[in-house]
Length: 395
Ligand SMILES: *Cc1c(COP(=O)(O)O)cnc(C)c1O
Image (cartoon, rainbow, N blue to C red; front, side, top):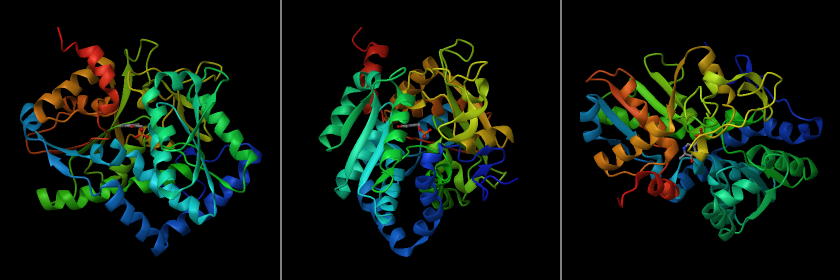
């Protein structure tokens, strides 16, 4: 079984590039050049040096002693929350901006839902002195004011998408329209392992630094370069893809992908794509997505904005289809409990997205000698307002 992308841009039956003809030249330019550029020594040198000195890598692999005692197994946390800007997303935006520069592009566009990818993109544009336009649904602009402020402070223009439900998918449509109109000078930075080929493969490769570091760190700490379980939350799937990447072809490692069940998978308010999704096409690739009988995309729901996405990337659809990964879903309530648990046992306040991965640890059936790595995708600063509202510390 093969889990990397094939020559046609597919993972099994998922993936591909289902795009309007007008977009073909842009995507084709990228497809023909991304691997070549990524393998050039001067690209690698600049990428590695920024990961080290700007992002703050390698991130620690921390043995969580009290959490391990509680679950009676050996739990390590891969600390992506310690990256610059507070999550794994910066690994990918640093990579893509270097690629854009080498393609001679002078203008960056992106779309964002919760604003985390918008911030990571605006950050690297400020770093490189490149113009940045971020499309964001009008509704999301209101809901995510602190991230909108960050993007503006970093010098990006935040353009409201005012059509449809005024959320992520409408912002995506606006970004695609912009790219069609500006094929020469503009590069589109996508924030997860979604979109037409080559984006899912490219983003997975940029994020694969996570499992590359894990191998060396586990070798040092455990005397073997692999764990028994790798657990990660899945919105589009980029932090999971990075954490799984170097273990995809190693069946001794169980891969655990955790989706947001929202109010419960049967509640109608959920984002658990593997349970509720069917094959279809979204954002240019064939994958699993939540849709109605007649193929309209269903509005997803999760308390965590980063997991509130109606699809998963094609790699994850393939991992689900082939049963290479175990898929779990975790409700809002379970995730909130996991936030408090990690905070009180380890002194680490995780992002709401990340807490979904943590909440699944108790279900694995891991034995006392098993090694479990949880990818701690981001920190909880951005979620403090939700935590204060839900935990009632003053009562
Ligand atoms: C955006 C985000 C996610 C979800 O995105 P993936 O592409 O699935 O990784 C998860 N955790 C955090 C902290 C995020 O910001």
